[in-house]
Image 1: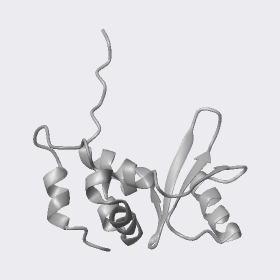
Image 2: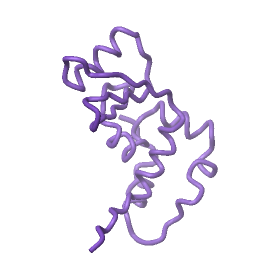
Image 3: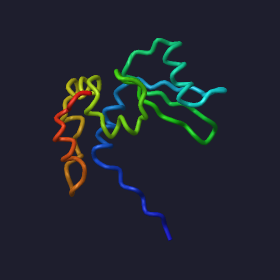
Length: 123
């Protein structure tokens, strides 16, 4: 029996489209934990937000982090809550919501309505 694929929410797909427009940095953990390696890389390189960090733990596992104005977050959290980050809102404004979110029209009930309630509230 085949495994049913998990459906990704439209809100997360929209966030993935937004995050595709920011710089991505790839690094190895070395002897540190992934989040420590990411924080050290940010400090050593003087990285300015926003940025994505792909931290390779081993040949099978890569952890993804989002470096934003308020700190380091998991990339999945940033995808799902991209409307909470001012720098990501600037990207949406530059590209245009219509162009960025084309093809993500509602097909049923999900968390898209919840995102619209926020009206890009900033934290």
